[in-house]
Image (cartoon, rainbow, N blue to C red; front, side):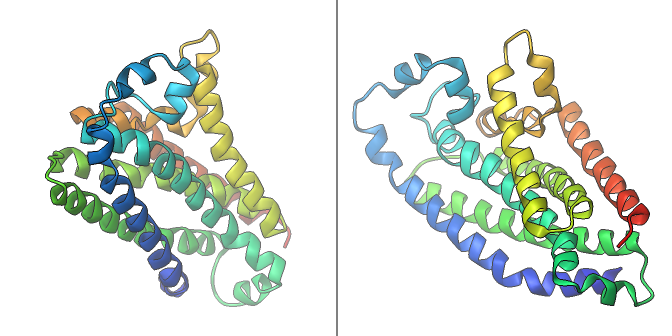
Length: 264
């Protein structure tokens, strides 16, 4: 299993570095704009308070002000680029893992070696974890250093809590992608399902929150990751964390079981 993990990790190094570099550039640009936004004199907080609840939850998140550095980052970076963008990325990566081998015709060669299907799924899944850790570490450092550079203060404990919490959320997204990867024959179809599922969850969570249909949004991973609360006041819900952890493990078990039963 670890031979598969090591091999897959090596293949992901370049992609991880490119992703980290892109996020660092985005972080630097976003934070560099903050002083001018803060000094503009425009009452942005009044503007966001007047937004429809669905739009505010989707694009701003659970923050009271975007003129403070923590609220600004939560709304302008973590709510979309992190919660939605990276969630989609790891669902896409998980969906590509096994389905791509099927599509390329290399899966039979892999399974010809003394390796079970469950070990193959586990090995490919575990190879995503170093990427998640590296992306989180690089982004954490870039955010903290950039905030210090412009003379603002961001609680490092809250920031660390947000990035640590992110890991279990990304693992859940990757597990969902893995289910799609073992279910479909082509990588394109698996990726479409994985990406569509995360995006669909985000939309459902947004439009059902605070309505009579709020229970539907309880099935969305994004319902259990409130970037605004974690970054602005350090509130971390152990129950929400447990839901994401259970979902990650359960979906991984489901993907391994589906793959064991499937004709290849």
